[in-house]
Image (cartoon, rainbow, N blue to C red):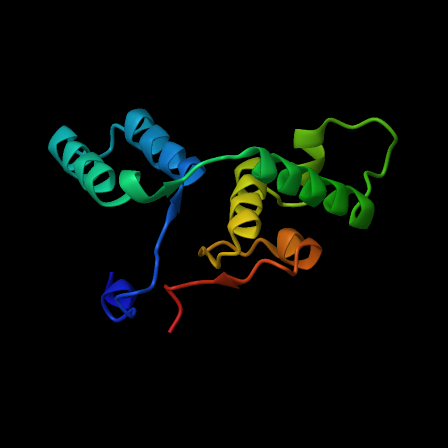
Length: 135
């Protein structure tokens, strides 16, 4: 929030619908916090981010496909037939992160994350990645 407060007013901060889904899934799966806090957080996310959310378009699907092809070419599976998800996991790649990269690339945006995403960063240098949690 501190970084957001000092960001120039004309800077667009958008949230991907994939991220919104991950947030909502976390709220639905957890029992570790009280219901009131989860409901308050959910209301905050809806109020602040839903109207600015970026969805998945046909062009995003094409970006996703290109990213997956690049990952496969740069890091081919060791054996012939391997499930996509298993290969990605072996590389430390989360499938949702591929979609986040695709959305950022599709819209020419900087992707804010605290995750390393080494494989995706090396395969898709066109996407600028930044972390607002560092410095």
